[in-house]
Every structure is written in structure tokens, then in C-alpha cells.
Image (cartoon, rainbow, N blue to C red; front, side):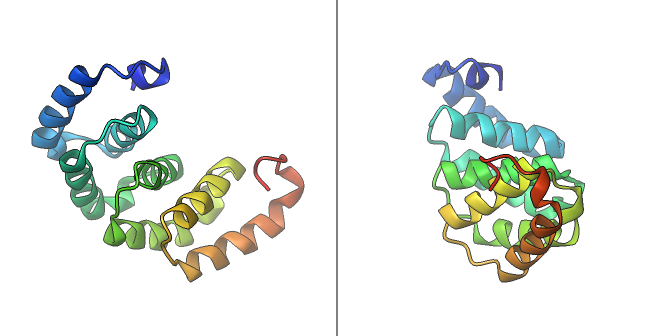
Length: 144
């Protein structure tokens, strides 16, 4: 996470992390999974086995994710162009039920991720439209 935040790719380090994290993914909490996916997407390091491991584990534990974790996870998969239709479907369902917990940036980033990944989620988009309509005055120009 720190290397990605500092915009330092360090490919050898990320390759080593990908291998080890894939093996240990069951021990990761929801924030660990979201942060790891975010970091790899941010530095554009391909790690298909890691993303596959994250998708599988996150799918089982999607209810453990907070709104930021849900958003960051779909953002990372969309940014990395990693298809994970079952994960997106599970996150769409969870986000639809909990949309009131999402802040305006999380709403905007979630919509962006589903659109970028070309994943249809009509119930999610309906929930987002309703919530965004209620909160539109609090959105900044980027969130719209």
C-alpha cells in the first residue's frame, strides 16, 4: 500500500508480495484485501493469481467489507481490467442494501467501476440513483 501511495512500482517487490499474499489470503481481513487490490491496480502491476485469490476470498466474505472496502475493491478490479463477474455481482447486492453508508466519492467510484468493467447492475444503479438524488447538494463536481 505504501509503495503504491508513493507511486513507486518496485516490480520485484510487488511480484514477491503477490506470490506470498496469494498463499496467505485467507488470513487477510476485508481491509487487507481491498488495500492489496488497490495497491496493485494503482501501480499497474499485473498479478492475475493474486486478483483471483482476492476475488475468491472476498466473495465468501463480502459482508465483512465496509463501504470504502467495497468501493476500493471494485475500483481495483476495474482499473486492473480483471474480470470477476461473481465478485461484482456480490458487491452489487451488498452495496445496494447498504448504499446509505456510502459517501459521495464512494458512490461515484462504485458507479465508475461498474461502468468501466461493463458489468450490468440495474438494482445497484437504481439504489445509487435514489440515494444520489437525495444527497445531490452535497456532491462536489467530481462526484456528479
